[in-house]
Structure formats: C-alpha cells, structure tokens
Length: 296
Length: 277
Image (tube, rainbow over all chains, first blue to last red; front, side):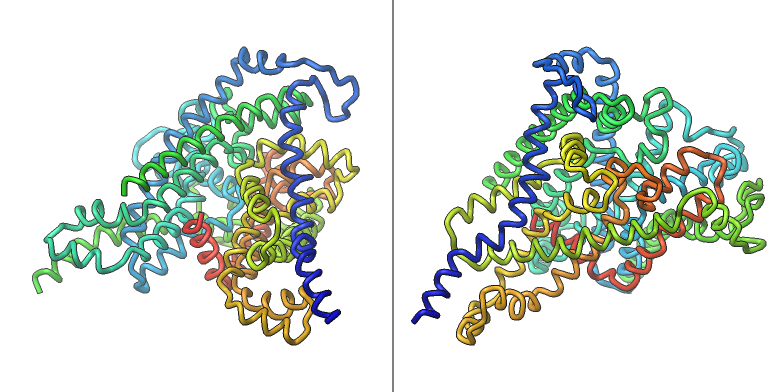
C-alpha cells in the first residue's frame, strides 16, 4: 500500500527531476544569453562591464551607418546566394547517382562524407598549401597549362570563391548522405509505376524523387541557409576577412568588434540584426514548407 | 544486351566524374599526411612533390618547440569527451522523461527545448562569453564544457528513441520494484544504446573540431585545444608549413580512426537528424 503510494508520488516528481538539469542549463546558457544579447546591444560596454553606458538604440543607428557592416552583410548574402544552390544541386546529383547500395557506391559515399572529420583549421592548412602562390600544386598545374601564377588567397574577387570552395568541399558529403537516406526511403513501387508509364529517368526524378524527398529538401535548404549566415570558422582560419574585407562575413565582423576591439555592446547589436535575419528566413521557409505540404 | 551496353557506356563518364571528386577529397588529405613527415625543404620545393624522399620527425619536434602541443591534445581530449558523454547522459534522462511520462507542462517545456535549437550560437556567443567569464570560468574546463552540456538535438533524438520502446518493458520493472531511475538506467537506457553511441560519436567529432567556443573562452596557451591552438599558430607564422602539417596530422588522426571504426554511427546520426528534422 505505502509502496504503491510512494511509487505514484515519485511518478509525479521524477519527470521534473529528470528534466531539471537540461532545463536549468538551457536557461542559463541559451535563453538567458539570447535575452541578454538584446539588453547588451543597448549599452556601450566592454568585457569588464566598467563604465557601461546606456545608449538606447544608439548602437543600432551606428550599425546602419557602418559601411563595414553593410559590406559584411553583402559578403554573407553573396555567400548564401552562391553556396546554397551549388551545394544543394551538387548533393542532389551525387545522391541520385549513389542511391543504390552497391559496393562502389558505398565506397564513394564514405569518401565524400570523409571531410566531416576535418576541422576548419585542418581544411585551411591543406588547401592553403595546395593553392600556395609559389609552391602549390594547383599553381604548378596552371603554369604547365600556360597560365600565369594566381594568388588564390590574396586576390579580392577570387579569394571569396576559393574559401567558398573549401566550405563546400567540407560539407557537400553531409548533404549528399542525407539525400541518399531520403531517396532510399522513396517507395520502389512508385518508380515501377513510372516505369510502366514509360517515364524517362529525368521524368522519374521530377515526378517521383523530388516530391518524395521534399521534407528533406526543405531541411537541407534551411540548415544550409542558416549556416551560410553563420560562416566564420573557414574565414578565420584562412583570410581573417581579407583581402580588403572581401571575405569578411557578418560573424567575422561581429567577432572583430567584440574580441579584437572589445566593443561588446556594438557587436551585440550586429548579433541581434543577424538573429532577426535568421528568424525571418526560418519563418519564411517554414511557412513555405507548410504551404507545399498542404498542396501535396 | 543492347540496353546493358548502353548502360555501361553511360556509366563510364559518371564513374570518371565520381572518381575525380573522390580524388579531390582524398589527395589533399593523403598529401598532408605524407607532407607532415617531409623535411621543410621538400615541402617548399618547386615543382611540388607528392611522395617523401626522406622521412623525418623534424616537423613534430619543431611544432612541440613552438606551441604546447601536448596541452592542446590533452585539452581536446578533455573537451571532446567531457562535453559529450555527460551531455548525452543528461539529455537522455530528459528525453526519457519527455517520451515516457505524462506531466503538467510537458508539451510546453518540450517546445521550449526545441525552440533553443533555433538560437544560433553565433548570436549568443557574446552574452555567453560575458556570463561565463563573470562566473569566473574563463580559461577553465568548466567554462569550456558546461555551456555545451544541454543540447536540444540530443534531447530530441533521445526522446524519439525512447518513444519507440514497448510499454511492457517499464511495467515489468515497476512490478519488480525498481525505482523510476532504476527503470531508466537498467532497463530502458540499454535499449537505446545505438542512439546513445551515435550521439557520442557525432558529439566527440563536433567538439574536437569546434573552433569558436574554445577560441573565445580560453586565453592561456595551456588551455587551448588543437583546433584553435593550431589555427592561432598558423595565423601568426605563415612560413612554418612543416609544423602546420604536423599539427593538422595530429588533430585529424584520432577522428580518422573514429571514422574508420564508427562510420556507421556518423552516417546514421547524420541521416536521422536530416530525416526527422
């Protein structure tokens, strides 16, 4: 009797006890910082909090008038506009070719997925040397082919695409693997039905594969878009934003404001802008997804 | 027969294309491995060479003289293990509660947990840095690890894993007089071992390669991890190619072994996060 009562009592309390640690940690290290970001963005403040000065929206007006902010936003938008479609199309093509579980496909898949273990640091050390302007492999090949030497890491206009390439090199395998998983889940019978209707491979891709993997497609586009707006690691380990700010992304800009010139309030204001951009994209994509699901 | 020939003919360009992409991935990694054992003059020789004419440990020795590489390794190991294993444990208990109990506020709390997934780390890094520094955890393992313990994605995946288990399992435990924690720990957790290992493997890889947080929250050379320590070393001295390769070699090797032996977990974890998300 008493035991049963105890058990019921513990059934009521235990779940709260079980979730308490994560709720507390998420509050202190995720939710509280998010709220503080808004608060800090209205102050002129450094790491030490001494001489903190309330500015209201002062930081934001300064952000809007800061050419370097607009430049970093432009770089980030350009990154997104090039990286996301390239990555999605490449991953789609590769996953279509690699859906079947043959031995060679499995080998290709695990090779393409391999860069998941490379940190940005490792990736940049490797590629910077391969593209080295004096002794790099690519430089050597270009010379053999009769081109002049190209300074890959230090040419405004070009360096941006070089870093973008490194980023895609590092992540396209992840998107590919996710697409393969989704394509393998599309029922075989749908393809057989299409086959009977004499639909060609391309027709099948449009009519069967694409609708079949729609949720995954949205997921990939959403995560790639969001991570494009957060690009930092590969920039930090290669150019640091140069040459001539041509690779300075929003997050690189935030990083330099906060941790190089110690303007925490100003950097927070840029972070808040970043947050709003990401939020708008997420909501727009999410409602797009829901709309499409309704239509299907 | 004719169709088969057509298929093979079409197959060849595809195979060439795929092989080309595979080479773009494998050659740089392999070349970096070999180059970390080449003497400096071979690394900067022109035209570049792929294979080593002589093998030397000079790069590793020079790297050890320039940076506290053993500390980097130690810190990376500590960060990778202690920010994942306790994390997955704590998140699994929470995921278990969300999956198997009915309690007031469950749905709203779970939505709250999911909503934190939408908070980009780059947006909160400054306040997080200020909070952790003001808790006197700058340059400590606590500061490095504690903010990474609660991970919404782990809670989410654990919840899905626990939700699929039959009710009879926990009923049997209750009849045997197990405590609620005992039921979770002894009966239910072993059932979701695969998800647990997957989250640990992906977490270890993620933390090992994490650049941003260690970069912000550590200042002392003895507290740096491989990822940010080597990045800073490369950033300050662009002529030290050999030691940079050696550092890259050291930092990629453990993850390569993890990938070779646990590739299935890498793939499963990535695919499920993509399909369920």
